Amino acid sequence: MAEINLLRALPETKRNIQAREDAKDPAVVAEACKFGEMYFDGPRDYGYGGYRYDGRWVPVARDMIKHFGLEPGMRVLDVGCAKGFLVRDLLAECPGLEVFGLDISVYAMMNCHPDVVGRLHLGSADKLPFPDDSFDCAISINTIHNFDRAGAKRALRELVRVVRDPAKTYVQVDAYRTPEQKALFESWVLTARFHDYPEVWVQLFEEAGYTGDWYWTILE
Ligand SMILES: C[S@@+](CC[C@H](N)C(=O)[O-])C[C@H]1O[C@@H](n2cnc3c(N)ncnc32)[C@H](O)[C@@H]1O
Image: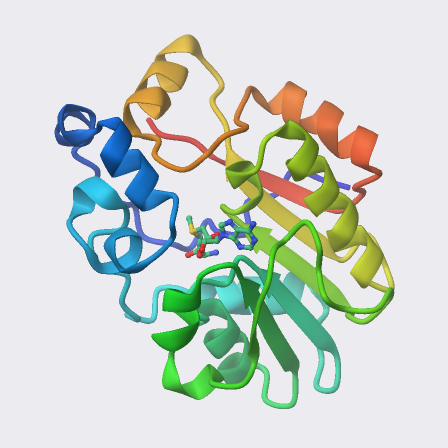
């Protein structure tokens, strides 16, 4: 169980926080929370402002393969996989690895990367439609904070349930280390419902029996 940034190889995201805050109203937030076309590929006010494959997950996939000792034949699950870009890159970087994704968004499934068609499941992170011990590794990036606290706890428990070795799990969630970072986050946030300081998250991990690795998405 360790704090480790497995997303360190991602390029920095440019954010116009003032523009997001100015555009934010309950209708925009409600639309974003549908995780549909507007969230992924609509204007930046509603979410990603265009969620397209550009290879940025390739070095992250390499880091994950190394960190978890992933090998051909092993099974990996990405919970909150969106269009399956990381699923695609894990498959490409470790031929023979069996990689699957799950997401709540029909839009993401219907617009997934062509290389992952058939590998993505529609479902919710707090009720994974897989038997116990189905995977060798399970990850969830920037997804679990979209639940309230009780839902986040259920989702963490589900990650642990579906892996053979609970240490081979990774979650990244929205957090902040200072009041200034908290204020920036609150200006930017659209969909996250539970977010807090790292120590509060760590307490939730413990309550949920989550014994994997973790890191934070922090706006600075
Ligand atoms: C911020 S995006 C992260 C996508 C991807 N993991 C990444 O880092 O690029 C959040 C994702 O969580 C998905 N999501 C939201 N609620 C979910 C739920 N209850 N179960 C599964 N996925 C969910 C959304 O559809 C979206 O794809």
